[in-house]
Length: 104
Image 1 (cartoon, rainbow, N blue to C red):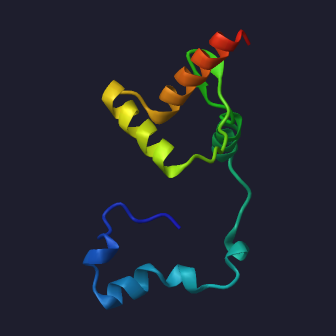
Image 2 (image 1 turned 180 degrees about the vertical axis):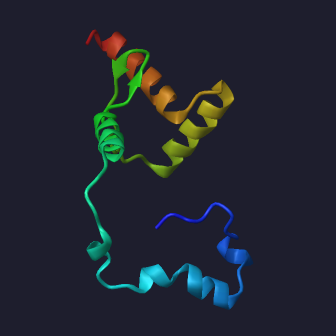
């Protein structure tokens, strides 16, 4: 499924070239062409699986989903841009400040 190094981008191909370049995707039983992973492929797979948790400054991070009012999110985005921070950095800073005030 890898593209040839000197292949044209799809948007520059003629209809015949596109048909030839994409014919592999018309097969129904692609798994028939599957083969066991090589040692190099296994090593890459294990490295990818191990990446799981992100780390910043030596601290583990967790991705969460938070629901925010659109206006609050826009204000957050505006302030983050003004302070030259990412939104998540601004939100983390705010949470740390609130937790410090609350003594938690």
